[in-house]
Image (cartoon, rainbow, N blue to C red; front, top):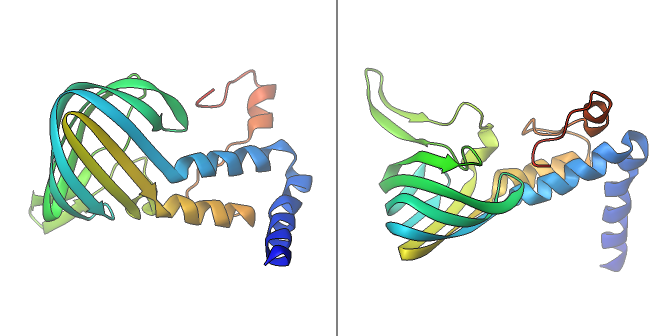
Length: 184
């Protein structure tokens, strides 16, 4: 078992020699993407579970609640308003997440289309975002937690220098141009 762990660690770090600091920074960012969680306080009620973004059971309603936690590769605080519902199929409508911008975005089934029931995802999401387990519980004080299986896949693919989520950044080029990476 020790040999297997050592071999995996060596294989994970080998590409870092070729790509300098981008590799390690992007793998660290991938690890930060695997989990999202925050506590909330304010006018809201929730009892909801999601097994992938497409299957959900329960209801979430919160209006301009104060939230603190890990989201979008940042630890901090924000205000959010969310309405989510579901009984197998459902909808998650993120009305506001200020100042961070969309946390999970709005997604879910839309049955008002002429082609029938259509699953809609945020335009900035990768297909890997669908592979997320989520639990939300709230009665004025609450907790929201996501385990993002798609980002775990992205991390392991990134070890082999492949980026299926398309979220790896070139930190060195950004530094040469005088830009700051997102989340800095």
